[in-house]
Length: 106
Image (cartoon, rainbow, N blue to C red; front, side, top):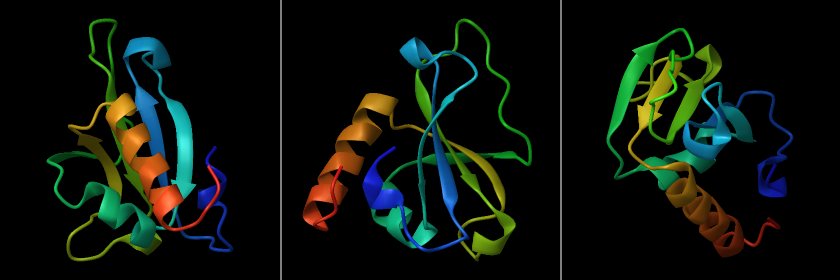
């Protein structure tokens, strides 16, 4: 995991990479406060898929899944799971850029 995500904060969003080489179950990539996640997702299309991790099959393309916990819920983010258009590779680039820009190690 990116060490920039290791905040002293118990309330966090979880970021999973799914499909493609990540496998269909998803790989936990990062855990970070929603306040840090917002800049990474500000212009991205997202689909709320509910309270359960989305079911994937062998033909599912690579994508990024974000879990928002109830304590992080607000007017723009409901608790549950979201699918994002950003592929894991694109999200990884954004995450690394964010960590470097904020002076946090990757």
